Amino acid sequence: MTDKNITKTKKLLIPFFTAGFPALDSTTGIIESFDEAGVDYIEIGLAHSDALADGPVIQKASHQALLNGINTSKLFEQISKIKVKNSKLILFSYYNPLLAYGLEKLVRDWKAAGGSAILVPDLPYEESEELLSLCSSVGLKLIFLIAPTSTEERIKKIAEISEEFIYLVSVTGVTGARDKVSENLGTIIQKIKSFNPEIKVVIGFGISGAEQALAATSQGADGVVIGSAIVKLLEQKGGVQEATDLLLEIKKSLL
Image 1 (tube, rainbow, N blue to C red):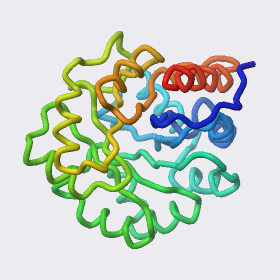
Image 2 (cartoon, rainbow, N blue to C red; image 1 turned 90 degrees about the vertical axis):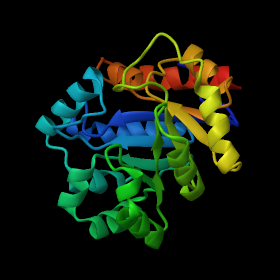
Image 3 (cartoon, rainbow, N blue to C red; image 1 turned 120 degrees about the vertical axis):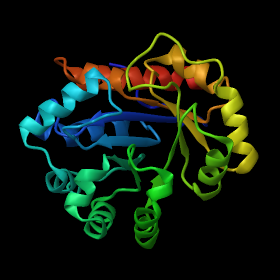
């Protein structure tokens, strides 16, 4: 077993997993293990049948989680029963499940369950005013994504209103582990920070291990999101420990 007593790195480490996968009652154990490893945030995916931004690994996990019976209410109930010590919790969800639950009820219940932020991949910045206002009213942060194709004007607007951090998508396309990280991310990061020098920028989509994490942070990223690689490990026997060990390996490399 890998030693978990590692001090926090200045670089943010953010694992993603799908709630209710591989089993409905897996969620709390995964969060507790990742939190014990001392990650900065834990991104909790709410399964959706039309996950347009997700690659095959996370789509498969979402499908199984839905078959297992996960939904917004059950997720909040599960999380409210645990005490997270080291990590902030981010709800990752497409917009339709949030609308179905009710936005006002959503932000209130997510905050009460212990959540810190919300990330909605299919909610454009231009249409985010209502959810942004509701999040602010209860002390939640709304995290925005910037893509390699984002215009300078759009980058400026997102950078100026962002508070927690900005999620920079490393590639055009869907989530999934890749062999290497684009070498052009540094230019986008510099552009973002020119509009908001204090904002942190984390890179996701394609980060699968220490090598990609180092490649991202060497270009100026303040942290990385590890998604598909984590979800793939969780499917295996003993997957929670394997996934936690991967996070600890990445933490060591970032130190």
